[in-house]
Length: 77
Image: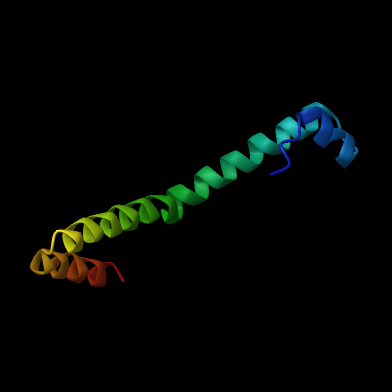
């Protein structure tokens, strides 16, 4: 969030720039493994797409199709 360089992070943490890089790579691998196991990001994208579809349907006044989407959502929960 602070947009620090690897060197700045290393200085603040009292470790080497290579140490920062290694920790970032390890953290990235852990996050990818968690997403593979849990699928939160993929599910969030699906829900976002569904919400956008609902918004379009309701804006167009197509409540019957919107109710079908709502039923699909309930099945996910």
